[in-house]
Length: 232
Image 1 (cartoon, one colour):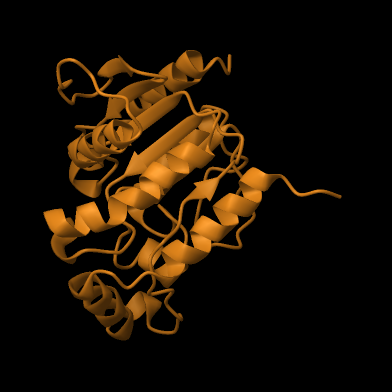
Image 2 (tube, one colour):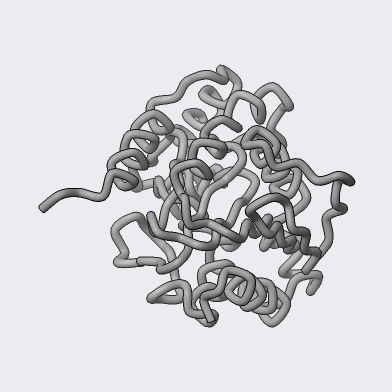
């Protein structure tokens, strides 16, 4: 059986992401978080490395977040897995037909996604969820390469303003640049070259606990992404 060359290339990219130590501050922070976990995770072995993208090599929708959480993706090794943001996101992906189950708790929990790939602008957990510009710029080539490899992607869903900015920067590296920089907003959408860029508030607890982002609001974004990607 001949393997899909896109899968081979994504596998190679994953290996490069996982081995990355470009940003000393982030390396120190992700490893320190693993050494001092909250009591509920005290017996777990942390991933404590950069977190690669995850999903379908034939994806037509790419979901982009900010960065892994210190005790979420940095613990489990899979993006948006093992924290409240991921709980909220994958429940929506399940309701809207992208995921086979509504939960994402560990890298070996049986979760699969169809038509979708999930990534982040920055691949290491940053202090206070605030990467430095130089850290973003060091990590951005990974997102650019993912977009090159995911040749069927037509829709990029940006979870939050930081991801919106990162997606625009990645598309610019691929030669897709809007005449006027589009403003982020929930359900904002813009056609940029070969892609549709769609915005959503980030599923952080700050947004979900306050009602700024509700399950129907996130579902509406993902349903719109399906429509724009031709998955309906």
